[in-house]
Each structure stands twice: as structure tokens, then as C-alpha cells.
Image (cartoon, rainbow, N blue to C red; front, side, top):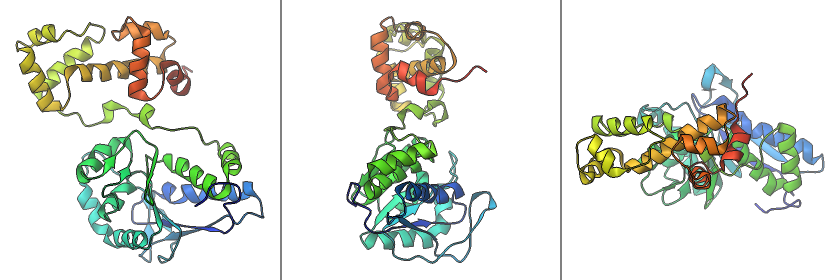
Length: 331
């Protein structure tokens, strides 16, 4: 698709692939924003031709919502919504009944047409064989699982939207709007995309999902030894990191501490400590009026500039920018 105001010379055909228990909001989210864009663009714009497709005669989405669907047909872009995926859920068992949908995805891609997944819809694309040697993303909460299932894919959990050779994957839920705005920009032009974002109150300036990652929700590797070390580090965030002293606390050599911690968690104690400090700082930035310098000191950094650099490396935003976006009202 070409960029620019002249790109929308003919209606762009969008098909959303519905399947049992898919998120209903992700079925309609992109079409609804495209409808707004068509109104913004005006009657002379060719707009978008949207259909809800399924290889099944009937589809019941999340929450028991019955969807009206049409048989699969040729479209320019096929959108695959996500589904409810809880940490620890058997993904294979979830995907096994979706063989007809996976076949439809594979057939669409084989015809050289664009395919887009929303959130964990990426797992259906993976089953269809579309993520092989491609750059991809998904919800940060399930990026590790996707990487495990697709070791030859380059999974980028920091990105909101990734497009690689006709296959687009997005981060969780609201990232469908980031994708839709880019689609609108390419088909209808930047002016229409900007105006649509403002009408819908959608942020059109996001570039990363990193600021939204909450490490507390991620599966925590390790066992008794590493968990004891992590707990001690969490309880002593403001203490200067001293590997020898830490090893002495647990009556092991520094080499043994590093080896056991790495074997159990895949990281170093310092790496974990930095992540834990950033997590605590995020909480303080969101919930208090303490200065950045005060928060830096509270998590072990006398130099607030060094802390700000570390914070930006972990979250994609400087502390003050993070507070502006995520500050919680006390009322």
C-alpha cells in the first residue's frame, strides 16, 4: 500500500477472521476505527470494505457474543484477533480446535496477501507457519512463550507493531489501534489518520510497549536459592551492590553465587537488582509526589542522572515523562 493522501483510490478490503472464543472487541476494534476514518475522510474517499469471515457457519466469541460471519473470501488484509490466554494455559490445547482457521490463514498468506495478528493472535500465525525467520511481536506477557514456540522467529516484546514481509504482529489489545492508525495513514493519508486519532481519543504517538511491562506479572524463574537472593535484594534496594558481601550473606563464594543464580534464573543478581529498583521507582513515580532525586536515592542511586538513564533503558521513558503518563490520581 502506498503512503499519502492519494493512496485511497479504491476501497481497501479488510477481513477479520472470527473464531470460537476470540475477543469480540478485537474483532470489531479495527473495523470501528476504519469506519471513523471513512467519515473523517469524507464521501469522496473510497474507504474500507470490511467483513467478518469464518470457515464456520456460526461463531461465538468471548463473553458468549454470537457473531454474524461470512465464508472466507479474497481480501487485501486479513486480521486475526486474539483470545483469552492466561499464564500457564496449555496453548496447544487452545489451538488444536482451530485447524480450520489456521488453514484459512495459511491459504490467505500463500496468495500473497497481508496478514495481521492482534495480541496473542500471533500464536495462530505461528501455527500457520508464518513467523518463520520473521521479526514479530505480541503481548509482553506472552512474548517469552511465543519465542519458546518459535525459536527461529525474532520476537521483539518492546515493539507495539512489527511488519515483516507482509506479516504484521501487534502487542496486546489496544495495539490494534496503533496498527489501524498506520493502516489509515497508508491508505487514507496522514491527515486522516491524525484526525481519526483525535476523534477517537487514541494515542497516535506511541512507539513502544516497554513502559507498560509489569515484571511482577511475568513468570519468575528460579528455585529456593535464587528466590532467597532475590528477596534479600528486594529488601535492600537502597544498599550499594557489593557482590562479595552478598555472597557472604549466603555463605557461598562469588563464583558459586553467580553460577547458581544464572543457572536458576538466566540472569545475574545485579541485573535482577536493577530491574527491581526500576520496578520500585515506577511505583513511586506513579503514586507519590517525591522528586526524581529522592526516588533515585530511595532505590540506591546517588546520581539521579545515572538512575534516569537506567530507568529509560528499562522502560523506554525518562522518569519525568513516565510520571506524566502514568501518574495515578490520589482522589
